[in-house]
Length: 176
Image (cartoon, rainbow, N blue to C red):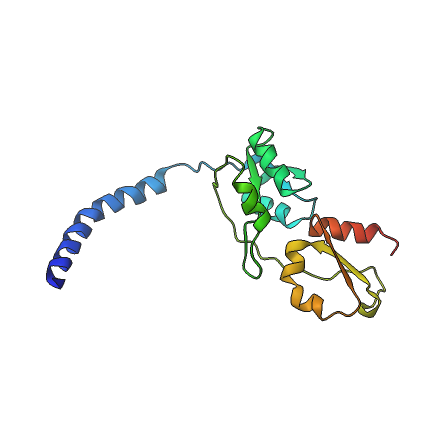
């Protein structure tokens, strides 16, 4: 039985080699179809992780910022832009459930993916000590990713925001 299986595999791989070479040649000789420039919707504000992803995916993106994940789906579906950038998975906190929930209600195609290193930092106004922090503002996903550290802080309220960049902007403009 093993000999028969090996002979079958050898016969398939010999015939398959020519086919695989044709596929590899086609991939090498086909021009790149993904555009360098595009109008792209992403959730957040300038400086958000989604903007960093846009900058890596497109060399010259005209970014349309949306208040929430659904706004990105709506912008693409309505034709305001051709592409939307959204997070779907996170190595430390799992799936981005809100995006998966929205996927069921919209017609779209995933045309590219990207791994982006996310590095959260606790930011405060100059001169503020950690023991003076009473409230932390961030996106729910970042709060989850940092939950172990955040739970170590005593008497600190955690307030979810639309995104991390918006939270940082809010804190920087606050008198608190």
